[in-house]
Image 1 (tube, rainbow, N blue to C red):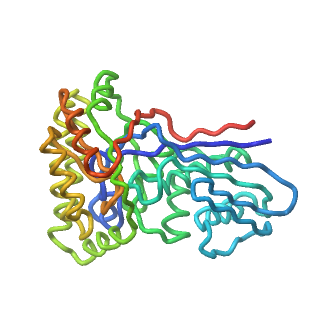
Image 2 (image 1 turned 180 degrees about the vertical axis):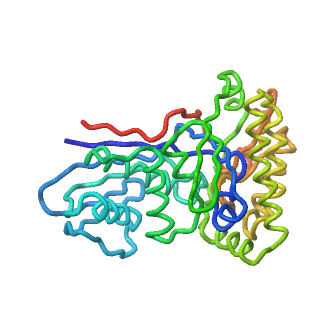
Image 3 (image 1 turned 90 degrees about the vertical axis):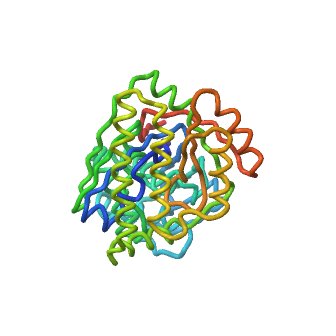
Length: 340
């Protein structure tokens, strides 16, 4: 028997950062994101040899441990061990013996939510294998708890919910980790136009998102007015983006992205730099009407909106900057699991 699962990565279109505590707990946050046809994959092969094997194919790493109720953290694929520990603690009670193989279509630090999406995919495989009574909100919340509480990894809440639910969603965040996912019923032709005009560009760099997020959290704790006002504006941006998409005003997306980008840079130091600013300026000069860094900032993927037929000029300009324009499609389906 083999158990498989996959979960989609996401593009954060608006509101990024307002899902991070303590801002979301104090003021309430709002995010608009869309999942794409790039995935995190997990395969579980049950065994009876009393061992737990983790094999991260994309990282070229493989580690083997005796099957115990708790695996100690040693810096080797601790994310996978954290998931195992929680599954055994909450559901299995006794040690499990298996080989877990994982792969992610985007590198860590890319800004597409790769780590959280991997957690969702792995949990989904365990849910399929052990027939756990977990719904979508349960899976997303468990993934959030493992990352942010058990493993103390800095970050927000949107990635786990995007990967679990899939599609285009307007998400609301408030105190006590309360999350409401509102799927948006966008007309197909408007979604096609957005997909056609939105360019995904990999800068060929990555960053440690936790560094930027910790600065952002500190700014809220210290009541930094400029940072908090920036987050207020990004929350408003999510509302603007939702209304534009639902009304079919797709060509407003560029100006809404630009509005968010101007404010996002004020949230914390390190979100942008001269390298990223140059890429942004070159894309705008070539015909994009707006864009943003994906995720916390500092590197990874960027997105740009280019109306009419401007995208070809923008792609040509971006190709001169050392990165890669990536083809993608929107994905309407969230985490999926099956048994072979």
